[in-house]
Image 1 (cartoon, rainbow, N blue to C red):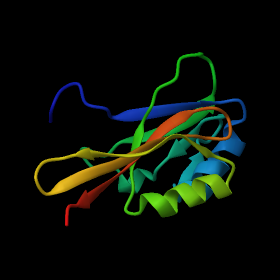
Image 2 (image 1 turned 45 degrees about the vertical axis):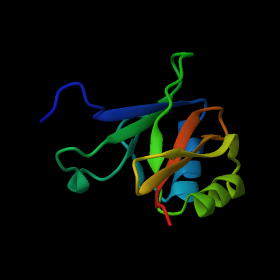
Image 3 (image 1 turned 180 degrees about the horizontal axis):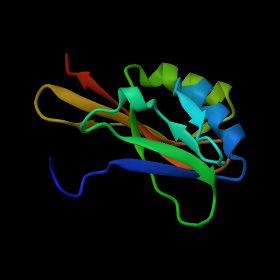
Image 4 (image 1 turned 90 degrees about the vertical axis):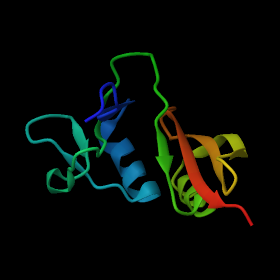
Length: 126
């Protein structure tokens, strides 16, 4: 196992339950309340595998923000889902070369409570 890799993320929220609903609807994430807390776990315990990244949504305590990037199979469709659920694109789609055969199409989005996150899709060149 490599050192210094991302193993967990946390998204701060003014209303963790409401923001959990956004991510469930916009991205299809499985999110459940951690028993006895106001902490919402992203992902199911039985799906955790070595190298998997899971996280949580919790009451915002810090003003700092982290950008986590989410890989999607269809970035245009994902953007539509995000916008339909109250999110928005804040840095428009752009392409970046990823070697001779692929490009990475990416953008930054903002959820309804002000958190910025990235989307990316790897696309084969024609």
